Image (cartoon, rainbow, N blue to C red):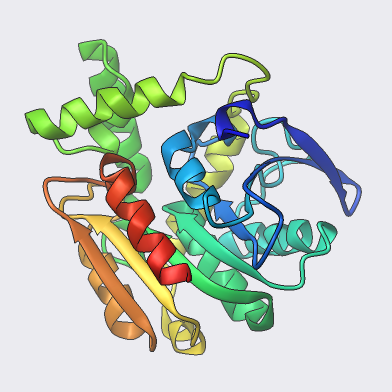
Length: 275
């Protein structure tokens, strides 16, 4: 079944209903996806999910307070990570691979630190370490992009996720078209309260300390575009340098959403890495 038609499911996680969707055969180590600031289930690129699901059981979910999931969104990355761990445990999964994009990459780092045996391999895309350069500025960057989008009749992701070149903007158009392929059973939009909580968590993460990176010994694939305005690309180099078992991919003429612009190349690299 294609991700675009995957049914939305719910599971009780410590008394709170979490929504999720699955793709791929239920075999091997599942791959759990942690998504970005403002994202709900419908913000995952179906080409990325379907590509990964060709070889993996892929699970995408809304953390506490996000989209149609219940509860209120916590204001720290650490609490978000605890909720993600609780969700994985509720599904009775003993070990998972993680793909964390942007805010999801922060959460993936904490999950690996707190529950190292739960995690096999990690992909961190468009993200950075605690205390990383420019991370605390993400809220201001978002605000500016929303203003530009309103003035130009474009989507904020045109400015946030993609380079401003003709290639980058064409990739943005194609990505947004893919996100609208799902017609039925779409997720609830993100609430302003959740966005505020996520921005608070991101700001605090950006003021934090990356000393605990040394605790992550898992194989990690770090991925970004060469001009990320949300989690500046230098942060991906820092992650790759400071993690003990990391490899790095930087996509040319690409931004925060490099994994979506180069979805076919990214999927191939991810599958090779996870094999």
